[in-house]
Every structure is written in structure tokens, then in C-alpha cells.
Image (cartoon, rainbow, N blue to C red; front, side, top):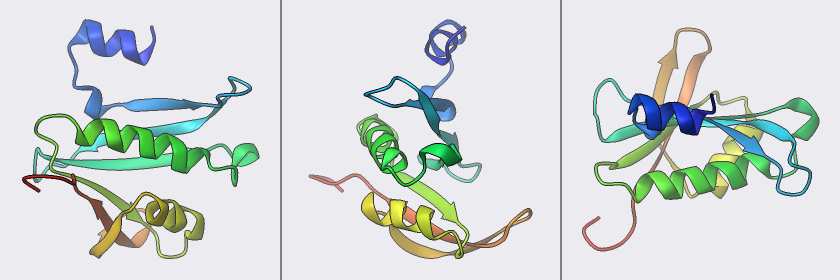
Length: 127
């Protein structure tokens, strides 16, 4: 069953699921992008992105994550998108910058250690 079918049949929130990133030209699976809901705030989505090593450096993370963030921010109830990125992960930091995310603080991940917290909020009237 595809993720889309699973979301539709199980009535799950698609903002709390992974999405496969696919190359427009070759139709190869190149990585994944996804959200999880913040335990602290239901209007905050945590975004993560990962591109398979053989496809890195081609803009896939930026393009796929940009599309998913734009979609999520258009949905009622989404107030902020956050990403936590290790300070040494330069390529992920570049992706966050290209997505218009701004660093708003730091945090701690039990597996990674210190992480930088980035945010993106909806733009336009009322925000």
C-alpha cells in the first residue's frame, strides 16, 4: 500500500508521515522528506529530509522539502515548520537557508548532541 493510500484509508494526518522524493527526470527514488508533529504544540511540524548518497548535491533535498513545506503551510492549523540540524551538517544547513528558514535557537538531541533549531512560518496577511 502506498503512503497516499495508507493516509486515505487509515484517515491519518498526512502532515505526520514520510514522503518519498522522486526524480522528475529518471523517476528514481532519491530520498525522503517528512513531518512529525511537535509533542509540545500541535501547530508545529518538525521537518526532516534525507537524500540517498548517490543523489546528494543535485538540489533534490531543497526542491522536495520546499514543495512539502509550501503544502503544509497552506493547511489550516499549521503555524510553524521547524528543523533541527547538527551544526556540523553543512549541506543540511544550506538546504534550510535556501528554504527561507531562520535559526531561532539551539537544542539537544539525545543521539546527536547539540542541534540548531530553524523555523519557517507562513507569510501573508495575518502572519
